[in-house]
Length: 91
Image 1 (cartoon, rainbow, N blue to C red):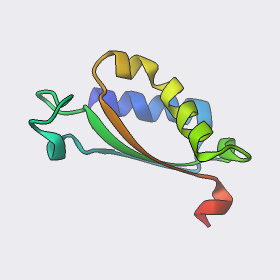
Image 2: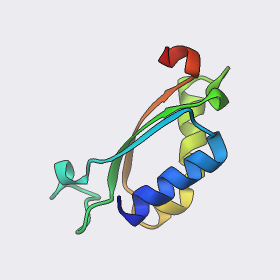
Image 3: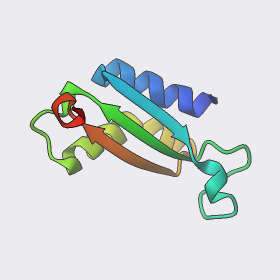
């Protein structure tokens, strides 16, 4: 994993204590598109299972994650595809 992926994982683990977390760099699929950068680490899919999402809407969950990663967006992170579930939803 690269530095951006490591930062994403660290911040999510620290703030949300997920029971499951998967960070996938999708940047190669977006080469040549807006926001893509040399070396990748601009587009990610992040799957999170966390009790911190209990009682929150899908939009509230996504805002929570985006707020955690403001610094990464400021440094060139372009896009996140988020899958956010509670432990109950994950089954």
